Image 1 (tube, one colour):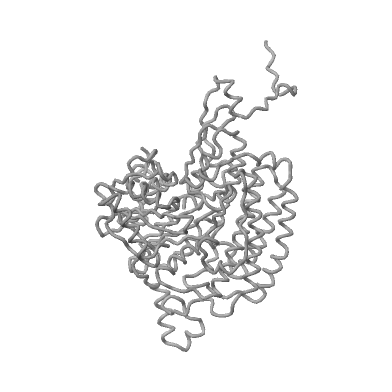
Image 2: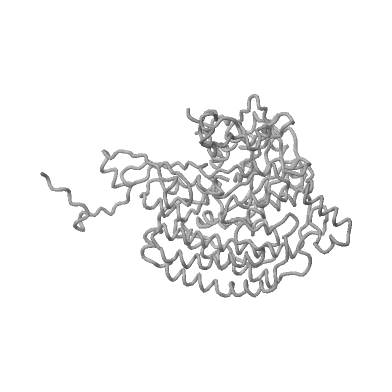
Length: 169
Length: 415
């Protein structure tokens, strides 16, 4: 794991290529996180990839409700040679949750970005097929958002099958 | 009335050229898109594959999942931390100890807890037994898909033996809820060690028998060798980890690379393949079973004395006998059972080596008694992305063999 100094050096290295990209660095429990501007995430990922973080192990979506900007996307990068993990984090608003896709550099982000779109409604620009992946294709709403209630989906039985909205169409 | 064409009647009619080249000679073949699943018997659950075929050759494939989606990650946000463990174990239902380990590791990291050495060793014993069990289910069901019925019974016999061991240590055969945040729920019972040792003495012989049946079996060789090949670069791009990546020659294993739960104390090897075909995947998994047996034996030999749970009463339940005499213990018990413990705000991703690859759990705590977000990076979900590259331009029969050796668990894919 990069230590606190290594994290700052890495952030400066990104700053050389993309001056406005890095917003903050967080060092927590021996893990480094770089908070980036959503507009620059593609460029930052390119820089980090060249710096050795060639494996994208996971992409998470988070809803920070009630904080603003609400939605977060976290990329868990891994350097398999120096055994380093690094998190790249960005925050977007629910009003226009648009982020550039990283599928062309990290093909593994394909399903994971689709899952975040499915669950949180973050739109990944340039994704090859941005469709719902786990929920049905005609599903409405983004169920992992914090204001979407548990049990927010009505259970269909015979007695209410005509009353439940969008069941027959 | 014309006579039907004679196909493969005489030796000279049989075209031995690779599948793709044969079809180039017949460009009038039409593409056919069909659904494989979601209820196809060899899809390991409810995986639906949209397969585009040209004759018998797979030209395109796209997995469609979600049929088993149960919203476990959403459910976790409505439960206190210790109640999350039983639901999270049901994600990848063949690797329940691993799911619990990933979640407990993340929460322990957020809390800053140091797990006692004995608990770490007990975890390793159960994790490795679980890995063998998962590989035995893979072997049995994978064998069925290749038409090997008998191996199913041999593999499930050993799987049942392991489930008996789990039942002995925790009372449950599956979804045991044995791992807790801060340690394990209780110490192993008397007699458990002897049973595990007897199993460890028997298991390598069983692997020998399985290898004697399958490893040089002509049908297995024809179905598995040189099918479903994917090179290391492609696999890494798709985020594939675990036995699939190791079969392609990359010895990446989190137990060695970033040891957790005292894995650095044990001496074990990492089996790797050479070409990354289905046969390598088969041999790598079988070899892993042998290594897991070695780890279990070493963990039993070196099992340290001491507590099996952290002493911190704010996280761990007080022992039962204290409740009658200590008012503080009673209060702690009451608070833990009704409200649970609070976790300081933070975000942590904790990854371990599951039977199918990197199993990571991301937990975001907001300072309350319930996690604000739990996300599981399930290896089955990520590994499926490489499926298309493995089977494209091969025969549809090889697709089945590749799926058997890919070993996706749909409970983990859909969560």
